[in-house]
Image (cartoon, rainbow, N blue to C red; front, side, top):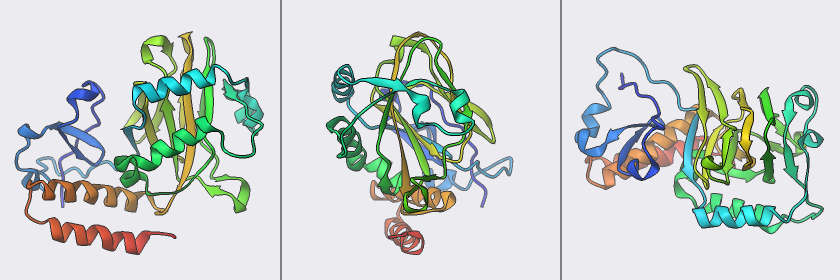
Length: 273
């Protein structure tokens, strides 16, 4: 089956994107411009297959929640980020990371995990089984992180398999210049600099880097997760079906039961519990 090929549009403000159709991770325009969603899924005048979705943006924290974390970080000590790097990464990692002597998860880190657990859209995308302990990092002028790939296993073979990575932006992009998270994909490099409380979730196998900060301070939280569904392509199918079910239930199409069955059968096939 051929599908319309679209690219993720980061240009409209978040408030203007709420009523748009999500297809393979891309906003294809206001719903009113695509009234026949069922038919549009089958239309592709150029016969080009869609690009698989490697990343997605989510609102994880409200701005007041992000501000509370920023205030809390003002009371935490930061150390050279090289302390948690190994191999080549030690030569290209130039940032600061919040320290903590607590064996239990501190409150700020708990608040990030709690926000992820309650965000339905993120849950449908990642199908997370386990989270790594969040790390808060800070970039000041001149700091950056060169191109790298995240470790596949965190904590060794008895630890966590990193299927997905997340960068959660904590302060306003107006407070600093530079500092974009740049992700490489088959379509080229895409740079992300999001609003406070928004996060980019992407394949942990993606090559990525943080551009140099030239003014101000960039604050973010990062974490990794092991998905209940190991394979990216199956997760993408499930995420597409999740949205198709929602559209069908809203009356966009008349096949909610059939799509719901496909969605749950694919979970039964792919989930690792």
